[in-house]
Length: 636
Image (cartoon, rainbow, N blue to C red; front, side):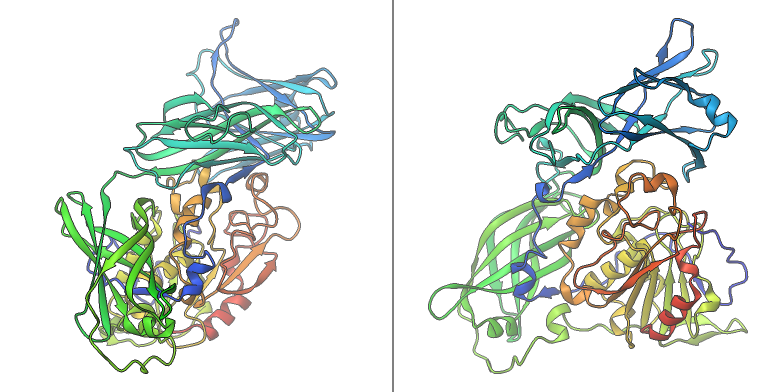
């Protein structure tokens, strides 16, 4: 998001235009502990809900008796203290805001803002909206009536939102009923409360796509559809006909554990995929050579589908006849593009069977086909049997431990050359450091003077990419480099990890202490991605649920190559508005808790640095001391 000028850089800047499909996918494998621990299994949606103790209301305006546009809202008060209300609107909206309660009386909030009252905070958003925050001193059990109005001789206000914060600790928990989000089946939506003593009276679900409302429904506690049991305090509904990018907005009202009214909302960014692939119940084991076996799954794929991510656990048979876990396999499988049944082949290194003490017959478990972009499962099978004849004999004392090629397949060497010298002559480059920005960045955030040696800059300005597309473009940037390490800001860290996991590139051959280093990367997503107001568009990979699906495909061996930092403000919040929504501590975009990558190397949490420029503290990528350390320790 930093827009530092790049005009004077004395190194190659590669501006990728589109991802290339010529990347060679890896034969990804992971030991049994990775899936037995649950790390490589898709979680249940109810175990990773969106939790909210705020309300973000989309306001609708109607004509009042005096001809002005008006929007009235009733805001219950759960506890004594300050209730925060924040108006978010575009610069062109001329809004008058007034509030009234039985205890506090009437308050002209617009007049207070004009007088510069200390309880008012103002600021701007990257989306060109502005916000105005007011604190209303309140008593538990009270209720504020808030009216927003605009001149009747102007167009009806649109895109105005009201953020309500400062309620109690009660959280609204929402999730989809299943991660199998496909357009040919109903999509279930579920809501519950964090306190069993609280009561949900009403939950409205508003579904929008491309800014247009496509459905407005109410959840029910009737035991039907996605609601598993009637009258259990869990409300649900199923909606049909959804496809593509969908924004789900829950509005919940009820009584908290003390019998006081509450208001909560939560938001989800979803991608509903087309049913473009499905599995059969058949798999075969072939033996092209003594060491590497091939497991072939039969799958139907739709016309135009170019790739699918195939993953499964391999279980073998021990000498006593019991099933034993052998290995987890995954691959980005290229497809023919035709509508047909075709085999999806994954490589099985025979040494995994030897290490597990397992033989035939084999069984595949937790088989899944996923969209590489959204990670939505096209199809899943709990178990698939594998047809095979006897294996050819070989030296079964060969496997002494897990080797690198067992985890990612045979190594592929890079081609070797790539940048320019001072005289604009092409020179050979070995051992290069790649610097990457993140989501929607206007330029290169890293100060290039903080880094030494051969450097290449990943430069894809003002872009919104999935992790997979970002990773492929990163590989394109380094396609002529035989080896490189990566220092990534924000989503640049996600992309580097995705590249290292799924595709062969010069990143595989980097030498040095730290292959991938990142700062401020939301490995577990950020709640901000659910709010539908990202400057370059919505990105499901950066949402908490999207990050959950993505992480379920990243093995521990890949995570172990990442060294990461998180930061937070010193003094005032990095960003006043986002701090109302994010859990503390945070850097204004990434929460410390969601910036963690289990299995990787946390380099610490540092105070005094924010996610980007324009926040209360300096941008985290300007920390010269940390940059110097990353430069010295970087693999190249």
